Image (cartoon, rainbow over all chains, first blue to last red; front, side, top):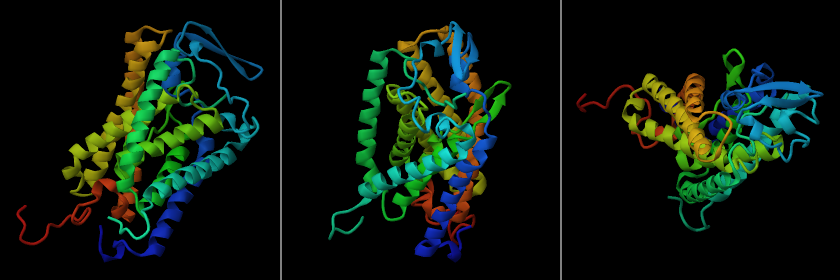
Length: 125
Length: 232
């Protein structure tokens, strides 16, 4: 599996691999996200157990006794990208996802670049 | 309907949320200190991409039962690809972006969410992967099986983390029932987590085994033939 062709060192090969990895993430967030199940995830399913969920004018209401009832509204629920929408428009989930990928990449990339820097003159170990 | 995937604010009381906030901050501080040794010219951009990939794939809820879905947590995935210290930071960054930008996962709940997904899932997944490392080094089958098992058990452990937090400071559902439901649903989600993790780790290892943290230090990553003269 790791013949001479896959020996590390070639910067262009690494750049190509990174570009491919980013493309997969962008496609997942930008396109595949439209195929995602809209049902509540495992944690939400448990949290809503015992309650009836009704939607009035786009606002969810819980009646009964359940864990989620004790949850409070998110402080940024009215934010421009809240709920992976763009300004509340869920048809733009893909765009919100692409933005999220880029923001995460920028934030994580910057942090890891800073952490990985070595003082000048000192060889990397 | 909002796509919401993590604990929201208020599910556990304020002292519990604060206590796990401290756990998360201390855990991340340790990870920040330890991550340095694992980061260089190639692993730093790789880690940034791994975080972005986890953000993307967490959006892809897959059905597990009628009326219920699951999604990748990514703990074992990041641990195998970039190591546990850097990996825990990856997941924490994803959780912060999701909470602050996408209103997914509460702000005061960041402590519990980071504890469950960035600490418990990552380090459980890494522990399992490390225990099976010799098996993982034997070839693609061993590596993908290791990735699957690490991801499955990491997911179960994260679910147990929530149950512990709920037992300390939550209300609304009987504890035993909560435990049974969380375990049952996350056993199913863990299968999906395992499949996604195995496929991703397998693909990265096929293209660039040198970029898989778990395989680092192996003489020849994923070489099936043994060097001549060595006993089988």
